[in-house]
Image 1 (tube, helix red, strand yellow):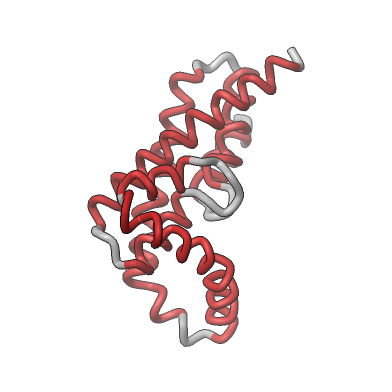
Image 2: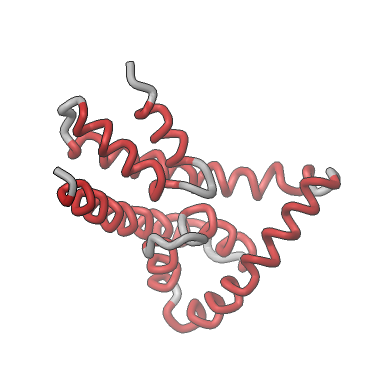
Length: 159
């Protein structure tokens, strides 16, 4: 079996790449093996949505324990400083537009946005968990559609 689908699933759940890295790889796999994209797309979306629950579990249960490890604390503090500017901008928007702001933040497929960053923002700001999960999930779906359209357009240029 081609390992690209396994790599695509792994990329879709990882904090840095998420579906922005996993979906194009999965689409290329699907095209090579004549697998319907209608089967691959929801799978990648669901895996990226699963990352939301993994992220919140991590922040709620594992993060505080790891803060006692020097290297983790150093990396976390570095990442937090990078994200803090985004959190500050988001907090201003969130107070007026709320749900929509979190959805759009996650849904725009740019580096540094996505389910993991959306979870960090929701966790740091102490936002309502159920509403945050819904907003982040909708953002994942939106980003997935944009990445799908971009990938299909890009592949069509070379076929």
